Amino acid sequence: MADSALNTALRQFHAAADRAGLDDSQRVILTSFKTVFQTEFPVEMDDGSFRVFQGYRVLHNSALGPTKGGIRYSPNVTIDDVKALAMWMTWKCAVTGLPFGGAKGGVIVDPATLSQSALQNLTRRFTAEITPIIGPDKDIPAPDMGTNAQIMAWMMDTYSMSAGYTIPAVVTGKPVSLGGSEGRYEATGRGLMYILDEHLSDAGGVRGKTVAVHGLGNVGGVCARLLQQAGAHVQYICDKDTGIFRAEGVDADAAFAFIEAGGVLRDWDGAGERIAPSDVLLADVDVLVPAAVEHVLTGDNAGKVRARLILEGANGPTTPEADEVFQQRGITVIPDVVANAGGVTVSYFEWVQARQYLHWREAQVNEELRNVLIPAYRGIINRAMSTPDCTLREAAQWIGVERVVQATMLRGIYP
Image 1 (cartoon, helix red, strand yellow):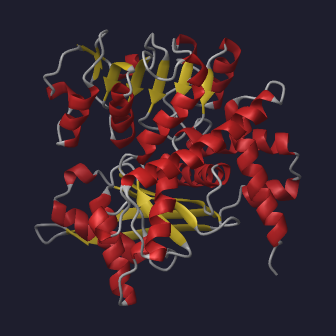
Image 2 (tube, helix red, strand yellow; image 1 turned 180 degrees about the vertical axis):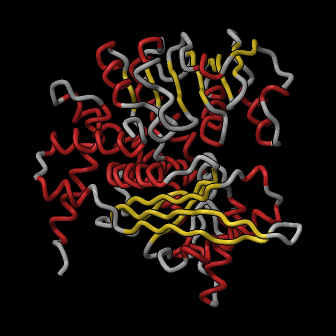
């Protein structure tokens, strides 16, 4: 499919491979997937009946270390999407200097349609299915769309029960009381704010800037809340059904709190004009934060985007066709592989804490997060500025691909 996430990931890779001067054999290695695991498994429902669900776990590349990546529960999960997300995670870990490769997983299910009991049954059975390929030294799952700390707790417990002792490092994004890291929930949104503030450092930072946030889940909601607290004017927000505009600034903190409590924006009684979610992407603001799903900025709407800066909170929100339009129009895109790397970075911190049986306070976590993201971003800026006609995405992917190739060549091909 021409507009699939995997096609986008491969096109982005080959553009970076051209920059890095990779030969055909290196390209074949880096576009291959270490493990593609697909399973169909039965789950007992509340009424005693059984439903069969389909799940995936894809490990892309482990040259830099054990693989790392989220598990999503969504009715729209496809194997191509999971492969693309695993590949993007490889470059994300490499560009931020984390000792991980990329992975991703998912189950085709709408978690909102399941009771808590059925959701636990599904999670535990899926974990049992993928137990042979996960582990603290092999592959470490984390939360993603449709999953949360509770689901990670069930996964950790299921894996630990099969081993006979508690193994907290098998997943990240767990509740803090079970060995999760302080600051993990806010990490992706906080990382977005750190990167944006650094990018705008010569223009006074985020204070006073107008912002539109497309998607008010964990990533977009936390980002909107933190940007508002930092003095930005969050004028536009949306969930999947409802957008809200308020020139004076939406109360992002209250709106996200309402979402966190299980509400939807169409029922929120906060001030603001109700608009279509797609209109948020075309908002006349300083910064657009696409923080929902893949491929929302396309060749069809890129010419209508009015923001001059795009901060990618979601993975793969921009198609290659849209990237070309933005480059022609002088719109800067801060790419996902660094912009939203806060989540995997603090997941790494959680893994380190679990392996050493330590606990870091949130202030330390946030400081270390900044210490990882800002140098990584500066490296991307320097690469782009020193190379003619090189976008930030091309620079970021170039650096990531370069590091994975170097690790692959140093290790050699076994046997």
